[in-house]
Image (cartoon, rainbow, N blue to C red; front, side):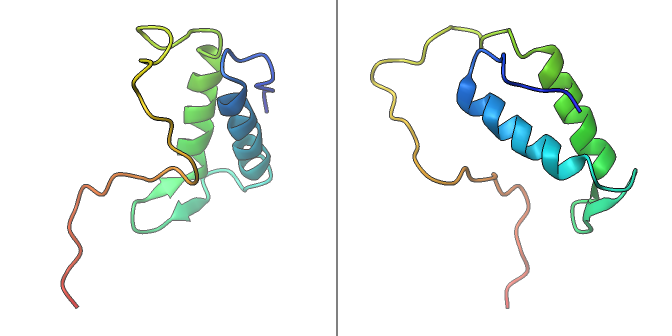
Amino acid sequence: MANFDDTFDPELGAACNRLAAFVEPLPEGAVIDATSRLTERDLALILRRLYDTRHTEQVGGAPDEGATRRVGRASIPITAGRPAT
């Protein structure tokens, strides 16, 4: 899989390299998460698109000076409620 060391964002590049190392040995089409139906193909597609845009900075350039940087694990937005237990 492609190497993301030359991306405009070194932190994103490192994360993409780790994800690529995770995805590469998976069997083609393997289901990563049955609930969301996320597959190896999905992750490979995301990585290919990110690789194609690795030199393109986000629209607007640098973040606002007043913006706070999140530290720790990135969260995934929850779009569907879970049934009450």
